[in-house]
Amino acid sequence: MNKDSFIKFLSAFELSYSKITKILEAMEGEYTFEKFYLSQKVEDILGDDYTQIAKKSNQQYFDAYLSRLKEKGIGIFTCESQDYPEKLIKVEDAPYYLFYKGDLSLLSQKAVAMVGTRSPSNYGVIITERFAGELASAGAVVVSGLAYGIDSIAHRKALEVNGKTIAVLAGGFDKIYPSEHASLFEEIAQKGLVLTEHRPDISALKYHFPQRNRIVAALSDVLLITEAGAKSGTTITKDFALDYGVPVYAVPGNITSAKSEGTNKLIASMQGICALNADDIINELGLKRKSKTSLSLSSNESVIVQVLSNGEKIIDEIADITKINIAKLNSLLTSLEIKGIIKRMPGGFYSLG
Image (cartoon, rainbow, N blue to C red; front, side):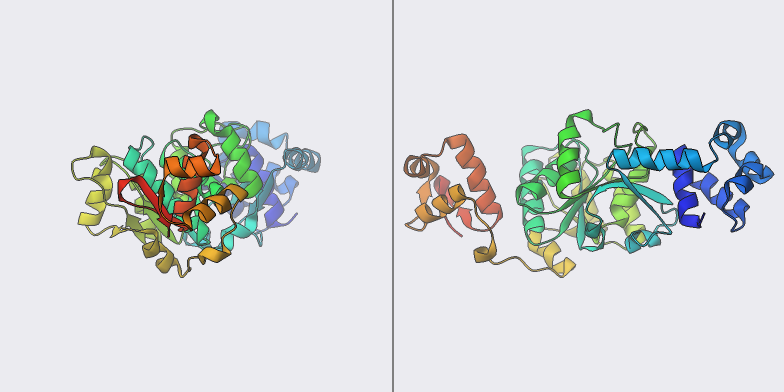
């Protein structure tokens, strides 16, 4: 077999980056099952795992493994594959392989990683939704880690505006973490892309999360932190981004809020560029906002736009005219505001943007 196939074979055993590196060196360019299980060097590298793995070193096992992945709708590419993203090449310990579901073409598009606290304030939610919606609408792929808080908010808002998003997981596809995000995972797999360097049956472990963060940072052209405390885990992602030469942006927050302490310090220390609106990042990415007329609107959104074309109105007036219930109307107004079609005015009024 060639090197690409051999690395796919090794992916069945959840080996560390270090062990895979040493095994590839031990193979000396000859990628055969026989050389693998007869090599004393390989036996020394694998230690106690050698006997169990050696038993599976045959074409029948390998074919069955690939077949199981295919049945689950899971693809796999390696550093030897043409699908391997160029952005990962800058990572010193770039994964030898990645499992995926979804659209691999997103890996070559302009991307912004959005990360932050897992327990955002109302401000953090609003800001994250605003940035994610506007960035995704402008054509940026939103990258995050499927975690609670900022991650999931960014993914969902990108999908809501019919944008694209990539989720990088800390565990396998059969062990979604957190489990509450299983439906979000499925939606991203259908409409975007999900990636992991872990076999499907592997649960997310504590040390997997920093490993995941290096991929999130590397796949992005810009890293945006919308809200984070002083000891936030986003610091790890920020450090990776700076190492990879990825620009880091941070949204300022209330100086009395502990949840904004991390982002405010990033800006004050000049490690993070102050992001006051999505245009700062859209310009950094070399993208342009779509014109308002080019945005597709639902029938209800079109009705609201028609109503506001006759002048600004409060939500109760819009509800009376359109007969849309308040809960749904709130969501539609937020969507239109993110798209830049309408704007919220003082006194609770809405008008065309």
